[in-house]
Every structure is written in structure tokens, then in C-alpha cells.
Image (cartoon, rainbow, N blue to C red):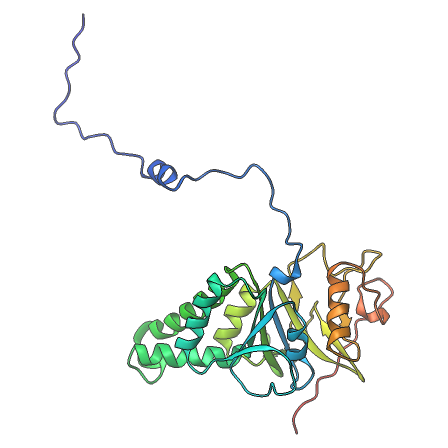
Length: 288
């Protein structure tokens, strides 16, 4: 019988760390495809538009909504609301909402000022007056991470999250030096990048003559879009670009729900994409 001698100098066999991680975390590959979300009430939404056009009223029509308010001006609305004056308060309400079963939708009105609270909190925590005081962009990264973590935490509660912002027309410069104007949220550049990268629906509330419309498919002039390829279509299957918001918030919300369920009949030819329709540049009221 042959005797196999063990080489004492041989290096011990390395453990497969990847295999250990798979076993420890009980990981497995999916066997079925995930289906698109069927409830708009579970979506992460950004609605931005002109002041007094009805953004907060539209938000209030979402079922069982709690508004985390960073500005004033709610005396004419019947809503559930909590005022947010500091970033610590915002984090506190977020913690309460993780266990809450009373509300279905969380509204942030407005997301611009919420970012400002986050900005001040991180600067104070790092004992600096401005993020540029910290080398290598560490403070800017810390602010982005804090704000991003907060929004993501709200989305992970299983509730819908609707962020409100105002709108402004900004000049966009191309590489060749050409410029054009585009309507986009008034949030700071970093806040906008965080929010626009996370939301499922990104909608602009604006005027088309005398009527109000919600633009859900943008172009060079309007920043908007969504991730639901099977939603927001006409009954005959054409993708919607604009939704008529009617004469009041209830009509607007009803039209939004109809559009989500592919039952909305466009008010005008330009509201849906087709070979015959012409895309119309909507108006935006600038301050004098």
C-alpha cells in the first residue's frame, strides 16, 4: 500500500470567501421575473412646477397622505401635516414612519428646503461653514450621502413618496457652445441629481394657455420622464406626454389615475405621441 507523505511546507488551502458569503447570507438566484409595480401609490414621484399652480393640492389627493412641510402656506387645505424645521426633526419623523401603518403616502413639500436643512446639519456636524472648507470634496459627498440615505429610507417604508419642488427656466450649454432654455426643478444641482436619479416618475406641472397640464414625458425644453413603459398610455396604446389637470385638484388626480391605468383620453392631439401629432412647446411664466 502506497503511503502519501504530506508536505509540511505546503501552503494551507485557501477558503473560498465568496462561497462563505453566499452561505452566510443565504443567497440564491431568482427563478421568476419581477413584475412592474401596479400601484402608483407605491412609487417615488417628483412633481415640480410654478408656484400656486396646485402642486400641494394634487399631493393632498393621494390616499392617506402625511405632508412633511418645510415651508408655510397650508391654511386652505385639509391635510395631515408636520412642520420640519431641522434635519433632526426630519430624521425623527422618518423613523416614526418606518413603523407607521396609518399613512400610505409621504409628501415632502418642498424638497429644496429639506436639502438645505441637510446641508446645514452636515456642515455643523463637520464644524465647517461651507463644504468647500473641507478638502477633496468630503463635505459635499457627506451631504449627498445623508440626503440620499434619507430619501431612500422613506421609499423603503413601503409607502409612496411624493417630492414637491418649484420650477425655473435655466440655460443649458452644449459642448459646441450652443445654448437653449430648459424648465427644471429649482433644487440645487446636487439635490437634483440625487432626486432625479432615484424617482420613478418625474413630472412637470405647467400651463398650456389657460389649462394646466402635467408633463410626464419631457424633451429638450422640459425635464420630465418615468420608468413605466406599460403605463401612461392612451386606450389605443400611444405613450402620453401631457395630462390635463382639469379645473381642480380632484379632477387632476382622477385624470392622473386614468392615465396611469391607460384609460385617459387625451384632451388634445399634442398630449400623446403619434405620427400626426405635433409636439408643442408649453408656456412658462417668468418673473419680471
